[in-house]
Image (cartoon, rainbow, N blue to C red; front, side, top):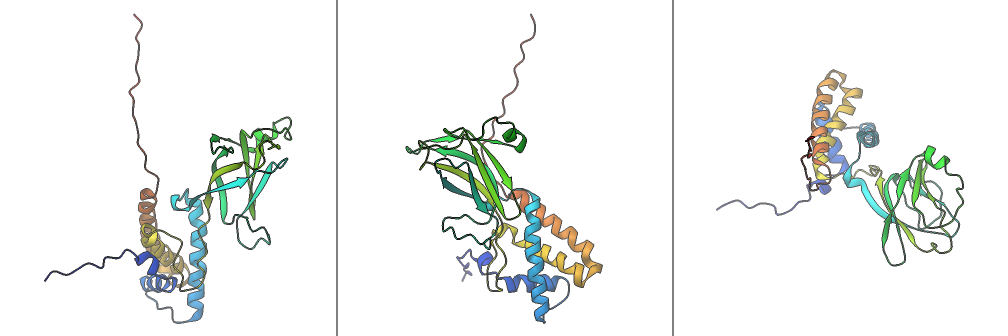
Length: 242
């Protein structure tokens, strides 16, 4: 009689933080017997997730949201963390950057906005001019991200929205029974990375070896992560002089 398969696809969500820590410690030849070992590993895992933000765009952390425009208000705020003290029930948290945005009118028709940098925004002569927004400027602070529109929405635009895609931060590890905010493709490099981080504290003689393994697995995961689309290649046509 043939063996059956599990029929499930839940390993990445049932692979809890305590098991990730146990696997990482096993790779450096240790057992996390003390509470300090668990706390140290959880801290390292959180630090590694912050470091991943410097590795480029992670497509699983791209999200979509909308801002309702207010008459005469050009700047709107989103927050990087959940403990910034705001009481706004509509606040958006975990925002790292805004990738692209469109102005959406009352008929749900979108008009793409152009993202400009600080110098371009500073060069605008009258930043309080009101009308339909055509451009936006993003500022990234320690505790928040702001998006400033030009033109400033007026009474005609109030109630319409800015629909935008933004980069989310990877969620904190939290309690040991949690799953991670990481897709299944990144589970191997997550464990390898934690083993590498722990080796710097507990097994420095293996650090270089574990770093090579970690970087190799991380590069494979990053190469697989992305948004596929069709590509078209058109040969350039030359018209020689006759």
